[in-house]
Length: 171
Length: 322
Image (cartoon, rainbow over all chains, first blue to last red; front, top):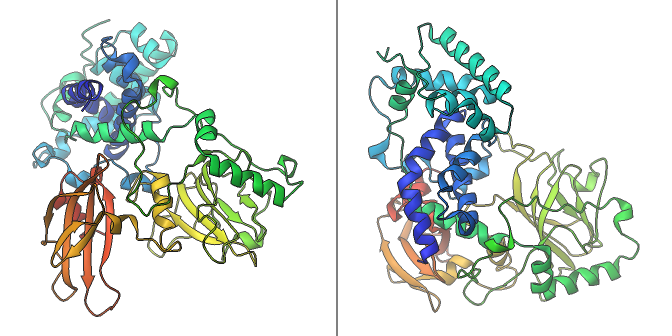
């Protein structure tokens, strides 16, 4: 394996969990999340000569994920591509347990949000992006960020029927 | 209900135990995508045979230029696709000999093609049609709304009796695909691989397949699809063969890494079955082989790229999930 490829593998091993969580949060379902994550990591591989060592590797992949077509219906032929089928994932990592539905209630509601509200809620209130950084990540205005984020948060509060703190750690 | 009320904490909690994928799987996929990418300049320089074939088609069908509405669409290049991404160490996989090392070109440049506003009756069957079809005189019809990504001109070559024209096409379908009962409707943006041929007596027929069903490599797929008509063994048959109950390499450069006779098929199905992990040309493949009882046609072999499953056992299980 070349140094180029070894460095890429090392990066993916280290940061795949974070990127996968972002994909799962912003995409409408698990299958689309895996597709988007794969697309992002493949594009990162293609750009690796330019990006590697810059400190921007994760940001590069993350930006592809959050700006992807989050709700695209998964085309049947993708199932036969190199995406590993769900039932062949590391079983130790599968979500199990009697409280799974309860535990995933917030994620389910986040996924019901329109795509742009989902993006802004995840970037602002989960990843802790500032309004300015969120706007840059999504190539939209700061006013638009505030609008989508507030509407998304209001929807989550209404649907979950409880006091839901945004828990934003940064401004 | 979870006791957490903080959005960040709750999402952290709900997303903490996601499944993992080996990093090498993404590496392999990235390598294949990088290998498939072509610039127009590279495609024209590499494929002398394809250029000659395209020129000859134009000579046979003069006056059939873009004026008839031929669709010459170029695939949209990814923003990350630059000459700096060209592979430095990974050559394209060339299948073991006897092979058909075709080179695909991007788009329809130089190909005698046309489209129509309506679907011609000869291009459809029971109301269904694909992204392309082939006229008796060897012109490629492209369905309205379809996008042709790559083409191999004359994939069968000059030696297959009865074939006067042929194309292999990778297209994004703007079409109405036939579905079997119980099958999900096929989306209009489905990407398909199609191989078409005609003997000059009528519209061409062919085969349609899903990219990635066993390989992501379009040119390798064409090599395999043309093997039977050209009197060659299939790709899988060039990887391994039965020697008694075991699988052994069928070509130089093939290595059987591991194999198992535990394929999940009953003894009543076949006199022998085996599955193996093999390597060839720097790539890893899985192979399933069986010698069915009572059919009299000898063993069959099927291959799939190594990243279609994390290990051999998982690959074997996919056969029983079909």
